[in-house]
Image (cartoon, rainbow, N blue to C red; front, side):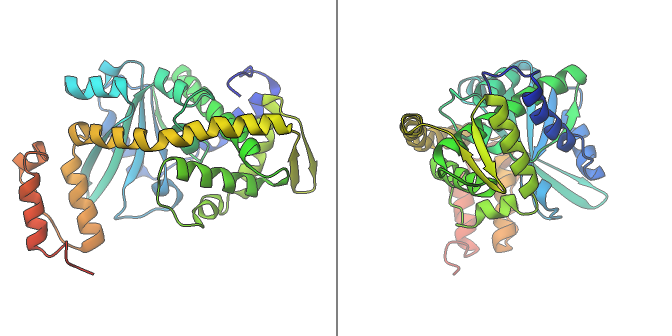
Length: 319
């Protein structure tokens, strides 16, 4: 798809399907949260995705991606800015209380050029295109031009996902089978611990959406296929499949070092990370870890104190 003219009729069909999703309204408190989050920053757009979009959870956490023109467009320290330049995205934790309800969010930050690169077929990192071939809402856009530039990245993400679905999937099968096998491969590459039925959860109630996107993306990329009822048959040669699988092994092998590098980076750049950890502990154990301001600002320095508090509370010994 990243080699296809965005304005071609076939690619335009992918775009139209995505636009129908992007403009769907979200809950008013989500819109208010994003408006407060953006403030006066010259943000290109904010994308809302993930489990918080699929199913409302009053005590859950929302997931956003903030897309920038330049790294300097988002306020943060020099170290965080440099880290985001080298290994995007940086992740921040934000929470605000509105009318007695605490709204929490993980906010990932990257530039449009990084977004474009990470949704292209050449990227060795599978996380971005695998995430953004799934449903998403554009909950903030600076203007129509910015929205269009972000949309182009999403079209690329769907195109790349559809290509890998054809190459890694069976010789023929339903669209659901191609997507299920693709997500199983991406989970393995990302070293994510997911249940065997996780892909079915992602597709639940969205089968028509994924089918239509797969067909439109294959058509746009010029991938020949036949369709008999619900069964699709991408006409790929054995050599093409073998080459693609070798290329996938490279990407799968990059999963561990990329994840380790991101975890190491997050230890120094995860703004608000102490608050996120406290929320996770409270959600999973019921223990309310009160973090003083100094510990919130210096979580690494105060890590021994945090571990001691958790041991006192019996968090490490509960079954």
